[in-house]
Length: 258
Image 1: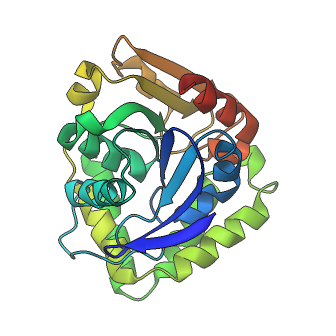
Image 2: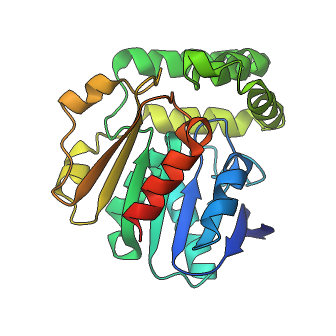
């Protein structure tokens, strides 16, 4: 993959064909997608983007919002002259993609909501994000990411993916405190987008892990997807299905965007 940077936003690019854009989650970076992207690049043009304040992308503003992140993604699409794309969004990247859907629906062929939720934070979740922000301000960022990443895997998969967790910890260690705090604040203040998701005419794929510690299967009891949607359940995955069940996830995405 070729590493590029435009307007302070860092991204990786590879492949040829229709465009798939990969957006990472909280405390992650574009590198988390590399193995997955290499396989997708056999059929598609693939861009894996560092969201502002994460990875090697600059923190555009300390008053970061999901809308500002979505505009940063559009900046890369404009630069690469990509008129339409398939957005694949993991966790926090899903919140950004919903903001993108609201702002720039004409740029989308389809969306894959990958271990994410259209709902606003609960009061409890907002308190947890505020607590994490306080920990980071106190200079104890390691407490946040070392506790976070093991929980992103299904309990049975933590030992199996120890090396991957170590890499994630190392990347998070090198992220700026200001960037992480800005992202936490943006997530804490995001609106409920369930109505937008329900009413969109754009094809939606919703991928959920049966053993996800963050997005429980019970979300399916209230989630309303549009008619042109597809539900994929990864039975042996937590919050990292593109790592835990890579082949199944690749088949799902390639089949949806054939």
